[in-house]
Amino acid sequence: MSGDAWEFVHNSAEDAVWTEGLRKIFEYRDLGVKDGSKGDYIAHVIRANGLKATDEVQHWHYHDCDFQLVYVLNGWATFEYDGQGVKTIKKGDCILQKPKIKHREVDCSQDFEVLEIVAPANFETVIVDGPDQAVAAE
Image (cartoon, rainbow, N blue to C red):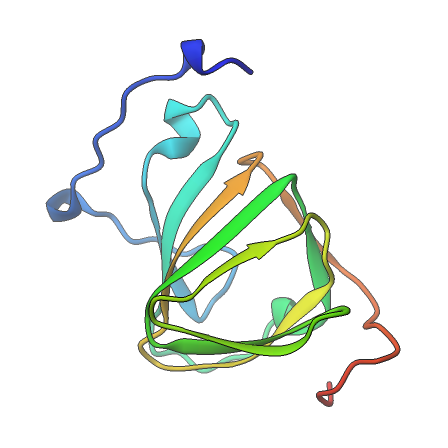
């Protein structure tokens, strides 16, 4: 889609709304990019909410998307990526995940918070078998 159809968006921090999303242990703040870009992109802030629970996304999965960028605003998280090994990302780090890379979360801090930008906005998360070289125990 052409950016000509997009709308200007100003998402104010003082009016932030935090909601449930893909992960039960996180809360999500939609930054208005999905609506403003007519679904071409989604941008949201994701932060730990203090709950301790396991879910499918801690298993091997990939996101059916064309673009995914994660910038760590606070805390840290450890992920395992197919062909890349175990990576711990911390405040100030940025990850550009190549499309459909298999990965899983291993652990994260209680103050973990990231900005995530994904295209398209309505991407799917697909649970898969882990690669043969997986390091951490499932």
